[in-house]
Length: 110
Image (tube, rainbow, N blue to C red; front, top):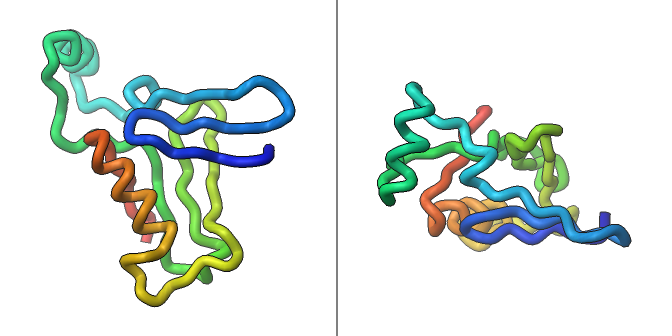
C-alpha cells in the first residue's frame, strides 16, 4: 500500500493495484433494528452516532491507530513523526474531525 486517504464518506487505499474504496455507510455498525435504519437512510434520516472504526490513542504516536470495520478489518496507524503537542493539531484528531464531518464516529478503546 502506498497511501491512505480518509474523506467524510469513505476511506481509500492506494497501491500499485486499482484504488480500493470502503464507503462508511456500508461498513458502519448500525443500531438495531438495522433494516429499519437502512430504510430510514433512504429517506435521508440516520442515527446521530454511527461508528465506523475503533481507535486507540493512548500509546506513542506510531502505535496509535484506527481500525475500520471493513470485511477484513483495516488498521491505519498514525505517521511515525506524529506530533502530540498540540494534540489538537495531530493527525489523530484531524482524522476524527474528518469522520465527524460525514456524521461518522470512532469508538475509543482506551
